[in-house]
Image (tube, rainbow, N blue to C red; front, side, top):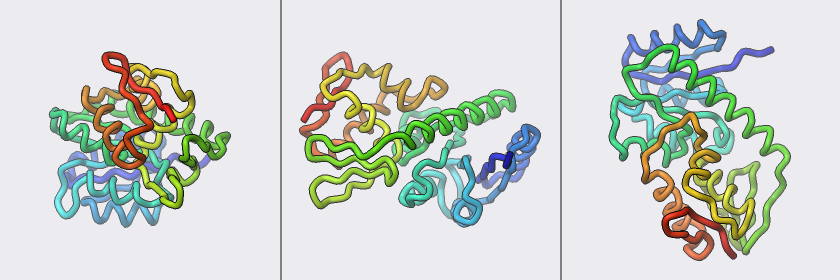
Length: 228
């Protein structure tokens, strides 16, 4: 079986080598880059299964790298996780809002780090299998395309970040059903990811800005539902 390919992008040589060593020890094929621009070049050349991005980097930071990669269809389903020394909600939201799947805070403990990476790869594999079975969803004037990770409204093609798309797809899977915040967290971000309390609200706001205010209803104190 072909080894899983992981790209690690960090401007600190000691951390880069530390992560490379611990991932290689688990049998992963590891590619490294020292800054964001080099990370993009290697991602496009190597097409890794998973990308690990430091948030704070010279030349181009991790958030910008993620935004750039998510704008390309070939990276729509690539697992991306962030490394950050910050604990603030705004850095976590920024990382997830541009399409990141997870974030890991420094200092990094090897066993926890490897466990998080393996969990993310498992989630990616389950997601890919599920998406292969899905067809176009047409509802309320929207056409939801899992292959392109886009939504079409009339003649307009709406590009969504990965988590925005997954959140919308969950809501439209059962129109009228109220999804609790906990259920949304578990199904979109997974139980292995700890995110700030405002994360869902930010993604709902972004979705409303892109597809219109009328589709997603807030059920105060509970969660959200899709109506058309």
